[in-house]
Amino acid sequence: SYSKDHGDDERSDMVCWNQPSPVPECLLSCLQIFKWSRYFGRPQDRDIAVYILKNACHLSKATILADTIEYGVPNHKMIEELSLSSRASTTCELIFVKDDYDYETLNN
Image 1 (cartoon, rainbow, N blue to C red):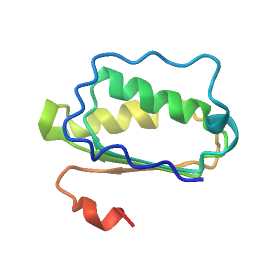
Image 2: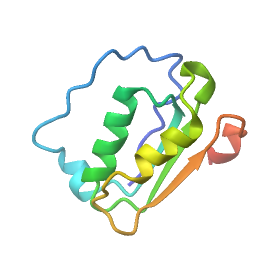
Image 3: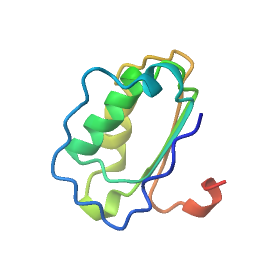
């Protein structure tokens, strides 16, 4: 299954995120491909991404399209934080794309 790309929402000003309990069944049993456009690297963004990686048991590919300009978070810090986080799927490929990349080429 494939998650809908929610990153196209114009400037999501999410203040906080409460992790669901229990873990949603779709994360545990269905999610295989995940793409996050305009990942800003804010603490709440990182928390959500880590939660997905930690709980998506069947995730084969996670693509993070980083926007390092919007919030001034260095690209290397974003990559390090996510690459060091534990993953439920041992076969998950984590792909990190910097903000100067043409997002449209990955929308297919």
